[in-house]
Length: 245
Ligand SMILES: [Zn+2]
Image (cartoon, rainbow, N blue to C red; front, side, top):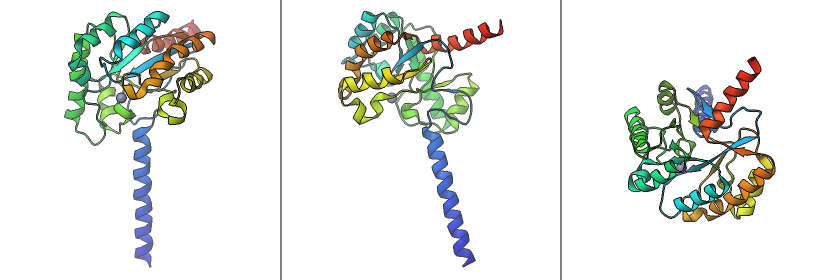
């Protein structure tokens, strides 16, 4: 009887540990080491538009044209493999003054992987980003937001933050079914310092691409301005400085 009880307790503990690790591994707001940024603490009405994956020929010029028309700078989290296949597109993103972030080389989940795999995924992509001519800081965003111990450890030991998001309209099929759904979701929920995640690079995500125009107009109508991730992070420092002066 006692053995059965111990076995049961052991199974429950294993289940709870696995569940806890799974939750930590997918959390947008918590990681074990270093800093994770789902939103920037700022009093200013500023948000960051961030675009994951790519660059690919089907979409890059289109999104660059939309952003140029509105005079908005965004942050593109590119994968090394796609950048290596389309170096000219990376150069165009850099030339238009957007920020480029690192979204790994192969877009694999960065859990249960060796440190040498993680290092190679990040550093190969850093090198390709520098070849675009982009000169600013290179922030990192994990594919599918997956991380456990080694990736946060690697980033924090290189003084790099993990950038996630607080608004992800195209993660929900009922919201992303129409571009109006995406626009409404973001315009209603944006807060000062919000980081908005959009996937605009693939044909399967047409509603995301088609939402950008209305989203920018709607957010500007609510008094929001647009910044890159690096610029948004600097507003935290500037407000803190202003408070201590
Ligand atoms: Zn991605």
